[in-house]
Length: 372
Image (cartoon, rainbow, N blue to C red; front, side):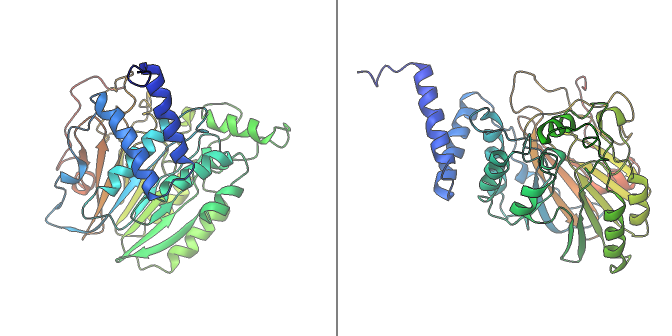
């Protein structure tokens, strides 16, 4: 009788306890269970995505076809599960989305900010969940992952924060673009004080993000070995252009990095950090922002690139609205069609032809509601 008439609160706590019990031993079977729990909650709230992003046809742009595709998950901002399980459910949803793709992507880019405060419990939880992706994962670091221990645990878990690789005729570069000038030593700040200042983005104490001279020298040496006709795709957590300085939607030495990329015929930069649909074209370089699984940021009040098609204002009472993950189709031309899998909305594709034409061709649908 007691089990039959359990209260809603009791059922919720039992479900939550089961969720975290399985997270402690997150093998493939446990992942399917916790993902199923999250999916049940989403379905019960009526929050199914209106259209599956794998069904959208982005096969051709300017008469070319994809040579391969890769998916992305970014900006998960995981807390200790005892404090916040909301963002855990979001990354599980994203992993489930990517695992459902048929065919599978060649790899998955993780776009940075796996953790919220760079703590071991946060980073290790994220690493554990990402192991359940079927496709290989390429990791990129964000400021929330770095400034507690200056990347010590990140290197231990995932390797160096900057590296390059070649895949099917494309040269990829992964940068650590969130370095800052030392504002903590003179002030005798603790590691956590430093981390919280950086996490605030608009705190006046911190400097702006940069790639830095040492890493730019590494990039120059890396690119010297690559033919200028080889398509180049760069992964950078912060945008490699100057979007909005007060919020640190910014990379201080972006112009210097762009100068190293300009000799190449086909260049695409994929970045995280801004949690929004964001498109830009500077010379021969196309820029695409990534969605967050945690929350959407508002657009900056000034400096928004003119080619950006803004998202509708999200519903503040919905966990998933304005969030998502997505896919990039690397075309035979070497450019990229970028698909935004917006949860609770129809997907949006920003085609290579739209950026290359300065917005004259294949424009994405414009928002019908106020932006944010």
